[in-house]
Image (cartoon, rainbow, N blue to C red; front, side, top):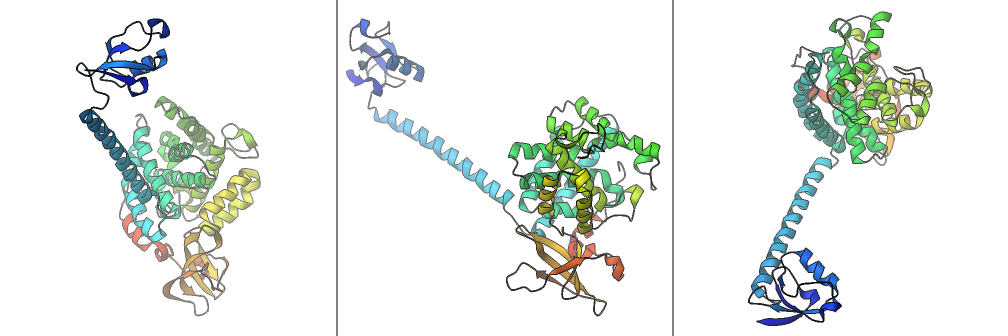
Length: 428
């Protein structure tokens, strides 16, 4: 059966029997043909034809109810599938990125550390043995680190400090990755750059895998010659990553230049000011903070508290660090980072357990000691940012000045219980 239709109603599956109008009025040389694809439809439309005759016995009808029903069903199925995927992705993102309390995220961060420890040990041990760096495995760890930081940045960052000096190098990598991620979020970097700097933080010290163990694990201070060898870890790491086929410019740059200083006094190239990339300037802060707040084999018992580290770094900032990035760094960790021991106006001592994003001087503090009676008291959470609270922090304190030890157990007893039993032998 022949049927006259407008060209706008033409679709694949129809058979054109005749084009309305003289052949001189359009660009098509055939008058009878099967329309098989959307491209065929476009050709007819572009030819200038306005109407045509179709043969419904040799092709689809313009109003074939079965064809239309099938087409609509297929379209709806595709729409439903797309919506379902979008909803699942959104739900996963919400679960992954939803901000949670420190206590809640600490459990997840604790498990992340347990999973990532052997993976990082394998990466560093493999690098020492001359194997290629497993970039895919490193990226998987970074994805987990970034998800944890999105939920609560303080949890993973602070828990990485509950490590022994023997764990330093590879847990330092996770700490730097977490801090780089949190700092990138504070600076408003996009997802791609945040992923890059997170990976850069994880691999910035990979060159230490090629430093002689006798130097890396030396319990005392390094000699000038030994320190000169230690400084080569930036070049060694850069070469190692290049040999592994890693071409990410941010990762390579951070690995090579995270010890450069704003005043040009750093190494390996003595870069100064803006000549140092933003990611490398970020890494200088993160690397330094973690280094001075955790024990290392050659500096046992000489670590700074989190709050004291921030104060010291403020003193070093004019020469060593970018001032704008340093301000963002302080906002990221807090003036009194989690784990800082502080004294309140009421005379009690407490440990900072959580910071408020918009009230850096009024964190949540777990009080545990009375300076008046000189005794420990039942731990109690005091939220200094809560409306009506008159209490405030009057300063940071050294717990040792009050004869206090094992203060970490005040805020992270469960995490310590999970982390302490492990003894890892390998790269330091």
